[in-house]
Structures are given as structure tokens and as C-alpha cells.
Length: 373
View 1: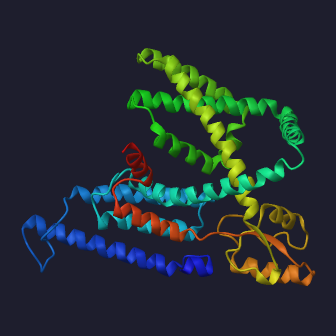
View 2: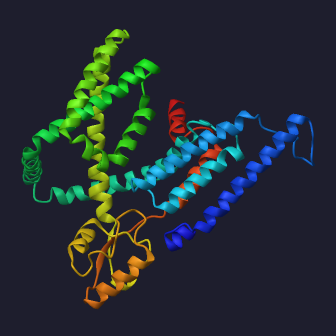
View 3: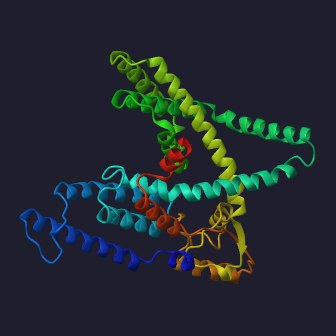
């Protein structure tokens, strides 16, 4: 409710969750101490956990902390949502020590249950909006619409021509990355990723793509990747693996990722992002407001507003930044600026927690089981 009203998760609520975690941990420790000695204190010690549970809890806590911190650093979540996820993830094994994936994969199970429901909702919204835009696209005739689409593709190719070395490096790096992933999978597990595993890999790469692509464009890294490819190919032959099959699976995975990346750009970047833009008066700026990309670029180039917003991230404007922008823009007579209409994600984290506790596994595995029937 706080995230819905104020677009933030207060630290006092996070600290309350940490206190609950500390209390639950003390309770389980005391139960194990008494239970292993055969003692009882009221009901404490009647049921207790083995000592290995606490080392498993430590592994789970570290992985959850790394996941939450990473999602915050790559601007997927604001800091409040990341802290909320970490605390709830820590609490889950104290509520049920037999949850699927504990200790090494439970944090991923929770992430999938948090992200898949809104992902389905937003994807449906994007498809509906895309379908609604189709008549307007063909309003001037199919031939003109297709000609316009081809022209945009040709312009895009021409724009990339001066960067042909970087584009080649990107393709080489991606191919080698997927080849190494397939090689490791074949060597260690000898089982395919499957639809769920491939989806998890694609979603992870899409999340960090804006920063990952900067590295993959580097030709030197492409040269190193080629060396890694030849070393991996030799290792595959020595290990008795089917090199052709591994290369073929890596190629299919690369094509699938290219399709997923293009679809994500069309549905999310162009359809949902445009529908999320709204204009607000400077006086309506509040802490947590997220400036649109075009608005951010304009403010960063404007001498009167440059330097007010120190860092752009998904936490949005701080209280000091919002007040400074209100004063600066109102004083110069600016009537409106463009911001994103954001959806509080704390509710989805709460829903993901309920789903994780209510049923073993992920919402994806439930769907697969349901379809198999």
C-alpha cells in the first residue's frame, strides 16, 4: 500500500521484515538446540530442523542478496523493491524449509513467480495495443505500409554500415557465448535447457542487454571469443561430444534470442513504453517520479536544469531533485514535462510470495503440468 500511495517502500518496513527474520531464525536455532538434546520448553523443541538447514539458509540468503542487488544495479528494480524481495526471500525457508529449489534455486523460483504474472499481463496488453495499431498501419494501403517498413529496415542497415566491424564483433561474441553455454550444459548435465531454462537465459540477457551489448560490440573481445570457441571445440572433440550438434543447438539458441530481442523491442519498447508516457505540470513532480528518456536528455542539455538530477536510475527522482526541478522549471514558465506512468511492483512481489508458498514450483511448471493433462 505504501508503494502504491507513495511509490516507495519505506526502510522502516524493511527493518520490520529483518526483525521478523531474526526472530524466526532465533526460534529455529533454539528449537534445534533443545530438540537435538531431547529437551522441551513449552512447544519449542517439539519439532526442529537439522543443523545443515542453517548452512543451507546461509547459501540461500547470499544468493538472494546478490540477485536483489544485481536487479537494482541494472535498473530493473528500485532500491525499495530490491530490499523487499531480499527480506521476503530470506523469510521463505523459515516458513517452509521444503520449498522447491531450496537452497540454491529458491531465489530464482521466487523471481519467476514475481515476474511471470506481470510479464503475461504486460505482454497481453502489448499484443492488444499492437493489434489495435495494425489498422492505422495499413490505413494508407498495404503497399505503402510495406514500403515504409522496408525503408525503415534499409535506413537501419545503412546506419549500421559504419559500425560493421562492431556489428560483426557482436555476432561473433553472441555466437561464442551461446556455444560455450551449450558446451558446458552438454559436458556437465547432458540435458537440454528446455523451454523454461532457455526462457530464463533469454530473460536474464534481456534485463542486462543495454549494458551487455556495450561489451559485446568490442572487436578485441570478439577476437578473444573466437579463440575461446576453438579451444572449446577442441575440448568437445576430446570429450567425445557431438560438436556438430552442439554448434547447431547454439545457432538455434542465437536465432531464438534474436527473435525474442526483436519482439521485446516491438512490444515493450515501442508499444507499452509509448502508452506509459504522460505529461505532468512541474508542480506535480513528486519523489519517485521517473523522467522519460527524451525528457532526461533535454534536461541534461539544458543549462538551467543541468546538474540538478545527479544520476538516472529506476529509483526515480529524490525529494531534493523533485523540489529543485519544480523550482527551476516553474520559474522559467515550463508548463509540462514527460514522465513514465509506473506500476508499483511491490504488489507483484507479494503475489509471487503467495504463489511460492501456496504451491511447489514455479507458475511456469504449473502451466506445463496443466497443459500436459
